Image 1 (cartoon, rainbow, N blue to C red):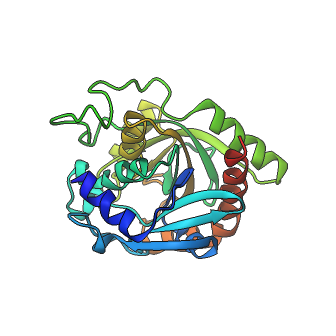
Image 2 (image 1 turned 45 degrees about the horizontal axis):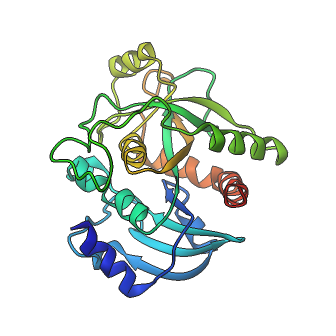
Length: 270
């Protein structure tokens, strides 16, 4: 199936990216700002999942950020859309097949750690994926990656250093923390957030960890940044809404975009 999907992509463009960028909530418009050479809708790729989440366009855009060759995933596939973990990470495996070597993940999250505020950008230093099914379960294709991949350093030290230095040089405040993925689509209960906090999670969301896990298995160098769009259940005495998440993501987008673009330019230059 993967080879068939790659064959279709190659029929549209032979562009070989250096960096694969997954755009989370509020960042989709970044794809409009690159110097694009080709775009492919998920719906046109054989046996490929369709993006149904609000604000997620569901397409690949190939082109340039400065001199960096990028493949941008404008929107992602979530478990809560009804897809299996294996389907949710299909885009990551396909992007690796295009030749990309760096996987740059972005998302919107709920802040658990009280040192995080709404609108903060958080460098993902590690993640907890134990509460969602692993996309690596099932028959393993050794040509894609090993059966038992090491996860001692999912988010690469080199890339984290670049993002930290880029934030400092551009005066962009950047927090650091551990991200936990839960399945969604319901926001978490007070008890669940308390559990996540006890486990050491700083922010919670409904994506990313299984993508990073798959990225490491198939040989990507991985990094990630999360935008804290709301405070998790129990931290404020009010309900959480999807509208709040979208509004904060949109407000933070200009700063988020700047950090992503500047970091990509540095990554591409070594």
